[in-house]
Image 1 (cartoon, rainbow, N blue to C red):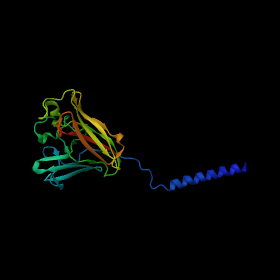
Image 2: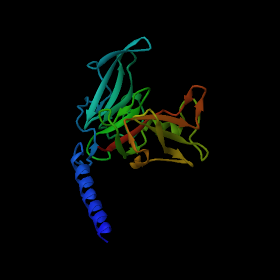
Image 3: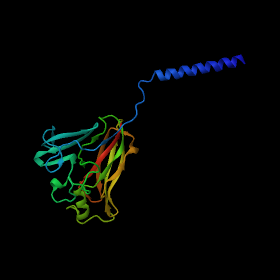
Image 4: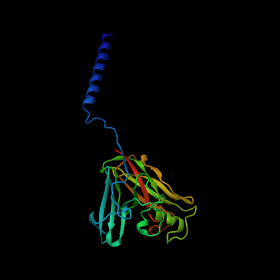
Length: 249
């Protein structure tokens, strides 16, 4: 009986010692996560109500043409717009406050969305990437909860009226899709698909894209596919508009 009591006491003391050691060896206390929303409200826009880069960015070569990489940063997330003056063109992530919904001239109407407004506030992001990505948390892994999306005006014009290379409007067999790819710190990737048009209809309002299944990522990239395509890729204009990107740090 004395032996059993001795071992019971020893186990209790050991348990207290282990508990104390475990607490004292913690490198840092648990820090609650913080969710931030990227709303694109901080970027000054031109007189037509958009920004797609300018000549103040880092100078780069774009297939022999002089181009500039300009970065919009908000709450640790970075969005690059690559502006090429000699071609009067851009790629990446532009920012717009335009309220027009139609498409007539490529500039400025490529910066319109089909709803005629941002999801919240005044500004939204126009996604038209070539190689550009979104760095979500200064390059450190973070959960991206999701964002709101809708169709851009030029893409809708192609869906409704034909795109100049493929005649006629979309029918029930046609589709237009964006694939969002999350890059892990390890280099692995995970994807989520967004249907922008299918079954004879297309997105006409702001809708939520849930990216929580991706887990922690360091970058987001976007690619487009369409039933209207040729040997070089989709003939549907490869645009989408997003707003209120939610990142949990």
